[in-house]
Image 1 (cartoon, rainbow, N blue to C red):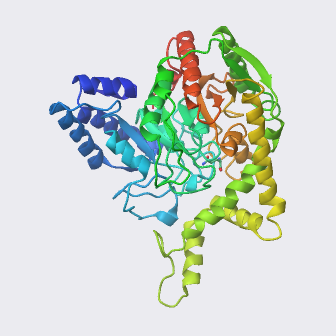
Image 2 (cartoon, rainbow, N blue to C red; image 1 turned 60 degrees about the horizontal axis):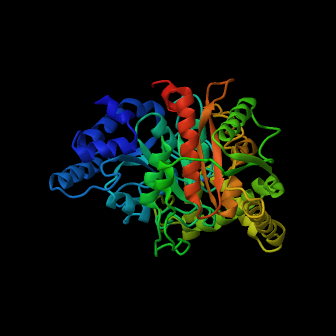
Image 3 (cartoon, rainbow, N blue to C red; image 1 turned 180 degrees about the horizontal axis):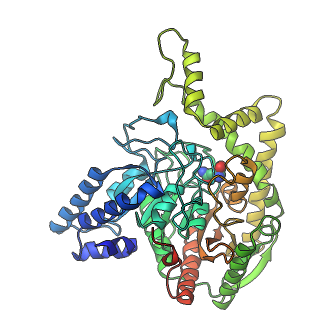
Length: 499
Ligand code: GLN
């Protein structure tokens, strides 16, 4: 039975469909795994044992009635605690939402349920998705299954750790500046930030609305594609949702091939601050792509050097506005409501107690950047940089003629828990390579490309595609994954120490 936890989502779905195993058996195996290891990993904030088993039973009954099952029916999934789940706590990793039970499902949650995906529970994350290590969670850090003393990435560290520790074959993340891709890179898993607007934000707690994007996390490229297809698509409840067909991601993942493709290496993504072993594995990936028949060229994106600075004005500005709704009157925590204090005082006391340091830092920064007199100098300038970054991408994909761009996903491998906790600038650098894609709104994937020789920790390769060309990520990703697996003789994650 324990072998069930090692299967891919595609394999699990096939075994359930053929009757070789039941969805209940698969769910029980994963719940047992969570019980055995999650005390150490802390990937989950909430495990919905009863709900998961009920969903699994429903799948088995459907099959018994002879109804057709969807491609992921009965497959367990770990859901980032940023998506609302009716009747199940949703905390966003914050004390301020402790005890809040959402009265509705996010569109993404609803789609998962309609596809008969079994939701095991809600995963740990940096508070309001602000961070790169999951250390900003109000509920304690998550460990990296490769080395529990190291971070699993952030903000979606719970989701990446659940995959790498075989607690779930599928997970959901959200990526505002890298929170799907960076956790994937440092845990040896696959994560995709779809084109902005591809996956509905309805019921996804807002951090920075013009950047936030939900997406699939998995252990293989095909599994990510299968999940992508379930969660993407137009939603009238989200005004920024794209009303166009979902690119053929599953077909692309089944037909990995880079022959004749033009692959651009972003010149800006190396140099000072990059770990030698990360660059070594990246350079090997470039060689691999050439061997597989791709034409590799260097691409200059000069505005990318300004991306981090622009992001850390735009994201805090939008967060200062979005988080204004947490006023102690509407949701969750309320502190000091003893009948003697004004509403303003109760709001202030609740925010003081309910928000962590990083959230407060960003609200203050954003409020300042948006204040009249500073707006043009800070927020306005950052928006201009955003346009320049979009133009760099357009130039590369347009007159530059590249099909995809590639880079390391992160400058370094997973760092020790605590190392950057008191150094926000060092923490922010973890997203150096992922942020430009969020600012421009196009799509990107991270997938494993080996272990860094100096510390034996996973390295991620980032593939970047134009907006609405998400299928290219899967076509290239599947080819790279197959070639690496053939070279190593197994999937990278099989080298992870067993917990
Ligand atoms: N690490 C980045 C930040 O702290 C990105 C977070 C994210 O993508 N949610 O803002």
